[in-house]
Structure formats: structure tokens, C-alpha cells
Length: 402
Image 1 (tube, rainbow, N blue to C red):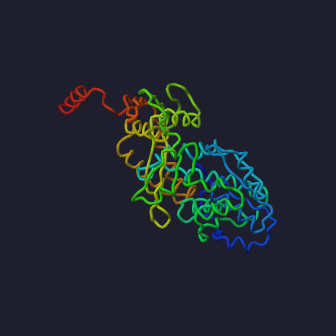
Image 2: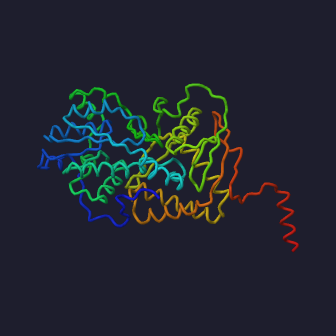
Image 3: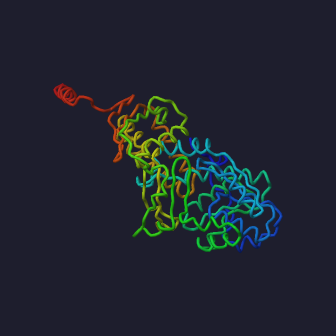
């Protein structure tokens, strides 16, 4: 099972209108009450610290959750302190793998088959851990930095509301639009010139790296800087190799015969598949208005894990079962993207998907080179496939005669 936000799967509590502008923050009276902000060290979250300091807030907690991206704790602590904030790092890696990645693998969480969902999986974990922290410090404000062009806006707001945070929460950016250039300029004036050098907005976890904005803002003409990639950047030519992935009941249990915890298997496959330049994705993601925004992603481990599982599903399941599972998968994805993680519909899909994978076990061997990864062996524990067509045809003919 995936994440249940605070163990609650029912309807959201009575809706509280979230913070949506800096003007609303300016009207908050208790300037010495604890304020918790979700802090990544990026342009948006750093600029929020600047504005909170300018508004006179004196008890600011800048909180980050480690979901597998590199965390420069010393640098983040320094940047937070620059604006009078206390930095706190929470470890969410194991929770993210168990509650987000494992269900996503079972659900083949690819938006319309184009690209793996990513921040949809981390936001419930991040929201839960930071909301718990905000409750511990009796915060009156809990802030994040999502804007109208990011689906994280409803995801985070819905999660925080479902978790029952007693204070005010939200993001000031939906109705206070500030350009990246202006944010960087103001931060530079405040003494953080490094922010002016950042051209891309990105989000990273151990499952997927995604980036947007800057030179990627226009789908009709965009250029992806090669240095934007990390996992799939080819530093040298590598000879072709084989990789074997083994599953039990839909769960990855070993790679090349070595049993890894899933968190380690993902890191291993990101290296071994990514070094060939494989696992890159380009796609348009729908916003809450159904307008579409361009995003670039790299997720080599996700690509090969879900490909292998699909081969075993086809080898094992009845076709009608597989067709229904695929319908449920896309509903699962749409609910996750819309920020309804933990709701009844999302949970129903997840339970059915997990149930369908009982008995889906076996291994897939891949040939991998610079152009593709392609199976050269599919061995299912409970196969429905034919290994000798001539023998099968003779058997069918014998049955027909009976």
C-alpha cells in the first residue's frame, strides 16, 4: 500500500482558504510566532526567506526533506541563516521509497505513457514530515513555494489540509507573481549572487530528475542543455552489457542476482542504465486549468524497472486482467497528479493494482547499449506464453479433433 496521509483516506476536512499572496502574509499579526517554510535552497524558497525577513518575521524555520537528491546541508544552513532562519533537514528517503516509489512501480506511474511521475510521489511525504514538524514547534504559518503553473500547488495544499494543520498555510506565489530575474536581482542585492546564475528550475529525488523554465519554457522551440542532465550524461563510450532484473509479486528483489533494498537498486540502475544515455523523457504536463507545460526528465532506473515489470505482467496475467489494470493505472496517475493522494478513488485503484500483481514473478534479462535496452530473456514463474509454437499448434489441433 502507498501513503495514507495521516492514515486518513476519507473526504478532506472543511476547506480553509490557503495563503496565496505576499499581501496576505503582510496581514499576519504574530510576527514572532514560529513560521515554517519548505526550503530547497532554490530561487523561489530562498526568495521567500528574504520576503519573510523584510516583513519582520523573527522565528523562521526553513525545513528541507531529503528524498534522495544531493543535499548541501552546510550551504543551506548558511543561506537560511543569512535571512535569520533556522535550517532543519528531515530524512524522508525510506518513507519516499516505501510510500511513493513502490506503489508507483506497481502502477506503472507514467503520465499517458510518456514520462514517469515524480513530484506527485514526493509531495505527500514532504508535506507529512514538514507538517508534523510544524505542529511540533507550534507554527502559526506553514508555507511552500508552488505557483499556478505547478501541480505541486494543489498537491501540497490538499495534503496539508488533510493532515489537519491548525494554522494558516499555502504559498504566496499564486497571486504574487515575481519573475525569476527579479527574484535573482533582489537576492543579489541582499548578498546572494549565486542565485542570479541559476537558469533552470528543477526538482530532484532518487527516482527522477526534472527541470523546466528558462530555455525550456516554449514547447514550440526549446534546447535542452546537456549539462542539465546528470544521470544520463555520457562521459565515455561503454561496451554493451547485460542486466537481469528479478521480481516477486510485482516487487523488484534483485539485480544481476544481487539482492538490494529498492533504494540501492534504484541508485545502481540509475548508474548502469544512465551511463548509456538512456532514460530521458520530454513531455507536456497538464496544469489544474488543463493548459500544458513542458517538462524534461531523466529516470533511467524507472524506465527499465517498469519496462521489465510490464513484460512479466504480460507473460503472467490474463489479457482482460491486464487491460483493466492499465485503466486503473492511469486513474491512479491522474489522482496522484491532481493532489488526491490518499483519497478513496486513489486508494481503491492502489488496492486493486497491488492485488493483481500477486503471482507476477520472474526475471527479465536485458541487452543494453548506447541505443536502447532490449529484453533477450523473459522467464515468468507462472507463464502463459508459448515456448514451442509447433508443439502448441499440434496440441490445439488434437483438442479440436476431440
